[in-house]
Image (cartoon, rainbow, N blue to C red; front, side):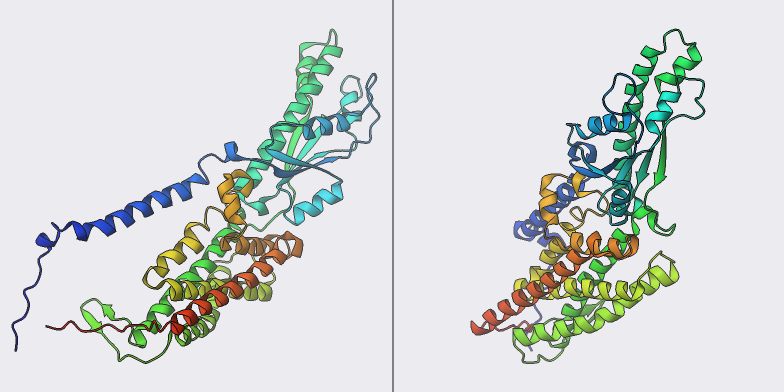
Length: 421
């Protein structure tokens, strides 16, 4: 029996530059890319904010004040919509239209001018004044706490600016009014904030849709990789090592296409369990607010399955680095471009570009529509279904296209071989 080869020592191997090179480069690049991608989308949302959809409702039916051609509601609407900052996309709507867009998640908030606004302002300068004029700011928490907050800030600022403009006119016309009256007239409008489209108390302030989507993506991503590794181990193309225990199964002759088919079928079956457990945990145990449960389960299954099939296709095409590639596709690039925590209108253009095709944005729109907007098709659910179908088709075409190509080229998978002494 030949003598056993001397075992290497860690202290000697640490002096080998070749051993350090690749791990150092890849770890550094990953740290740099993750920092830039994740923090780049949330560092300064106010600076990046552009065209946030907000409704303005002019319900003022009062007659113009003396010397003016328009009532105050029309004047405020004209001033607000003429804003050149570009931070908001003001949509002039009726009250019913604004409510419909709040209920479908098409606007982040609304500014409502009541029917008696001009009349109540005019009454301030007379003995008939009883209440302050009111402008109402409506929020939409279903669009996420940050998005709703940004819209509320913009809308509240516009309302206060309108109040100060009206106040300057009233103060100038007040003449010899006493100081108390002049103080009231200087800022005459009461700005009231109300919820325009309420969501449940167990909705994480509008964040439950994002975290539920993240669960679906992680279930598909991690499940796909676990299935891929498990199948390769069982077929003898990878070793199993748990602690000090090492297992190597006999190699099963099978081509790449049949292996991918096996993995995808198993992914479709096991995703039933993982999605069911996700719903049982989040809704059954944690009491997350959710309606349309059969639809939510079906959507969750199809969404997570699309991710799982994508993972299998990427692993089949890229081999050992497939897990890293799929992590970037489904998680690293998906999180900052999902629009679920920071509105897409408040992130740099690069992330808005990614959001056109990144899976997490497509999936979160559908989850948000089901959880918060009564599963309305125009709240993003229709587009989400279409993108799930497109993603699934691309995974199948890309995965089987690559494996068939490898098989035709005779690029057979190699099983681990024992080292010869």
